[in-house]
Length: 451
Image 1 (tube, helix red, strand yellow):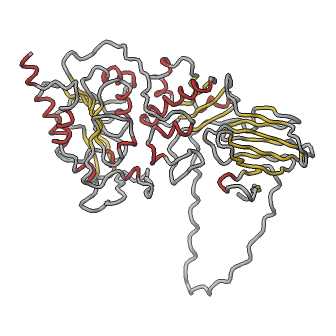
Image 2 (cartoon, rainbow, N blue to C red; image 1 turned 180 degrees about the vertical axis):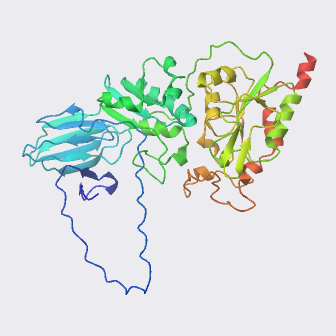
Image 3 (cartoon, rainbow, N blue to C red; image 1 turned 90 degrees about the horizontal axis):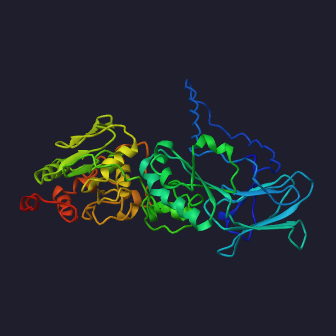
């Protein structure tokens, strides 16, 4: 960045470089003109490249000025990593911050008046801050990270259901571990199904973040292209939800969120809930006979098959997906609590690696998940996971590949060939039916006749 000076301690790992944003900007130097080849006669001038719009952050604001007072007008906090702002008082200081748990010095350098120093790493680190006057032997200020009884903002404002549901239990674990006052930034329609179950957590929207001055702030997300500044380890190694545990420094074990499961049963017959739609074709069960065969099997065994997808038809261009033939159409953009009220009394749920499967996980029903493009470690543990290891599989968790959010037909290894989406094309309905028979709550028709 042309308006920043990067201060580097040569003895440190360059991953821990910090930036003095308020330091004087270096002079702008114009590069010498390059020798140019003679222009071709009548050659049109090249069109200027279109400006790339800067992607707007999905996260709420944190105060630009650190919220905690040190000494001599120095400010600090742990919003977006450790941040230290030095005053324009004509004095120079030496600032050091370390990782208490590893004993590693992350940064140690002299500053200039007005310097703003921040860590590159933005996930949870138990920092120790030490400030000396320049040349001084004894520190004038020392602070160890301790958020007990302090406000900590944890942001998971994405509007995707599975991500938010998967990450949420780690928010409570952070609160319990540190005894802090957690402010959770969450999409309102998702927060609605958890906030009554977690009365000790304050839920706000991104627009409301400007009203708070937290001691620390952490951002939940899937950070792509090998980003290990916002997450300590690439999420593809550890799974979609467990990455939140690593970001927050808490136990990454699976714990589903708590929902209100008190509503009376709505359907008296035995039934199964299914969800067949998703945000990307790679997530679909692409076997052309899959859903039709399984729905028929369930109905032959006396089940009502309730499809609770948001969309009856979903896709793009020439590629469209319909709810399974023979399933009852309960689709629609309904409040999540209504979906919970329906799922919780189903004998089991069948879905994909998508949001409604994560919702069913919190409804305490067996979840049969059909997925080939993700590795089983990507989602919560279920004994009813269906994947075919004889095919290409698990591209989502391949460290050599980056997911393209704008390609609905993303298949990085075989797109455009006869192996396109073979990971789920070759999951047979027989494999799914065999897994259904293993679910303890499954009631086959012959047992019903005996009763």
